[in-house]
Amino acid sequence: MPLPEPPKVAAVEVIAAQPTETDRAAVAHMGATEPKAVYVVKVKLKAKPPVTSMAWALYVNDELVSKYWEYADGIYFTVSDPQFFTRHRGKQLRFSQNGTDFFDTGVKLAPAPSVAEDNAIRLPLQADVLK
Image (cartoon, rainbow, N blue to C red; front, side, top):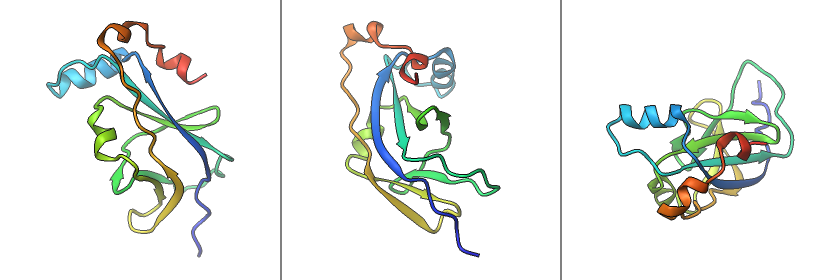
């Protein structure tokens, strides 16, 4: 049985936002310094994939994005470590259903916007970014 078509990506946008309480708790649990910002990576899809029992995993190059969520125009994930963008600069977003066969989206990870310490308090809330 052939694999279903992977989602088609229209665009990728990275937006700096204020960390949520959940973000702060997760970073504290790992023993890291609280981030001044988190980065919301919005992956706009051309169309939502059909609902099936076989989910698509999202990768940045070979690194699995462990959790992503849906928003009105596609999917998104959050990144608290800005070094993620340095490690994956110019890398392809890819989908896989089995971790072996990959489908390149033709779209590369966008760079993270820089966040000055004094601008961090004026960042938008994540909920506002996803509207």
